[in-house]
Amino acid sequence: MKRVQLIDFGKPLVLNIAPDPIPEDNEVLLEVLACGVCHSDLHIREGYYELGSGKKMWVKDRGVSLPLTPGHEVVGRILKIGSKVAGVFVGELFLVYPWIGCDVCSECQADLPHLCASPKSLGVYQDGGYSDRILVPDKKWLIPIGNLKPEVACSYACAGLTAFSALKKALPLSEKETLVIIGAGGLGFFAAQIVRCLTNANIIFLDVDSDRLKKIGEFDSSFHTILSSAGEAEIRKSIGASGAKSIVDFVNNSETAALAFSLLSKNGKQICVGLFGGEVTLQTPIIALKNLKIQGSYTGSPSELTELLSLVSNNRLLPVPIHLASLNDANSILDSMAGGKGVGRTVLIPTS
Image 1 (cartoon, one colour):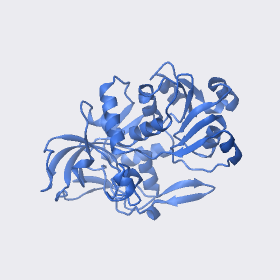
Image 2 (cartoon, one colour):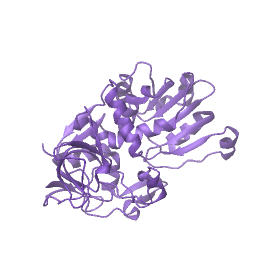
Image 3 (cartoon, one colour):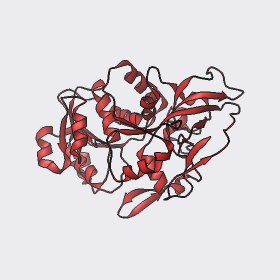
Image 4 (cartoon, one colour):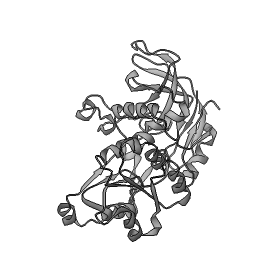
């Protein structure tokens, strides 16, 4: 098989050739048809997450070991199955749920493997989809893609799922209430695509990039799009005096977290999603006096991914912009992502 691997943290990925894995017992071997490029792939290549004030959280301290084939947004076609596999067949196409857990802890038993204390996520703790082959531990992690094309379906495994799960946490919202979405990058595009399937609330998107906001506005003419540089006073004009009932922060750095907190209404929710890093000082009495809720949101559950794919398949939604590339382009794509460039999602086609 052909794959692109991380050999040393902070260094470019390396293209190499290896024998195809042989599936055993419950394992399933898939030919990778499409693999989305995610910002967390960049964190893994760099070897750390920024925490703010010069502090870093090293991925090796979280159990990530090398060499590693990144990539967790995968659609593939079954090539071979292990001896104990039944109910799926060679040639079938599936989206892979990548956030695999231990299967025995309380989170896994509650259909929350993405929150497992001993995670085994594909592309993070075991080899992922920057390859033309991927070995999946069990068929239960395979989700039918229905009428979706592989290059469209793949990014719902992380970017789409993350946006969907975060938006659900922001509900319920009436049409008179306001939802602010911070960040019009990859996650923001998926939020723009699906949010009207979930709520008729007043929707405001904030971002530093006018081109991204212009694209966001094409999803729904009712969206308000505002440059973050306009300042809090200008943003408040669109929100109203009472503030925003829910804010989903896909950036979640020092500046956006502080802004989100200041814009919340009484009984408001701040959903922290992004991993851009930072710290914020909060006035703790305000949390109590305004009955505020501050909650993290990390990817989503298998049932949420199934629900999301059904929603996307059954609604005529404006597609998220997709750029196709080959495995050879992986490093340049991550470099571009590090520079904050690009609109929409990039998908690797290993066979190209």
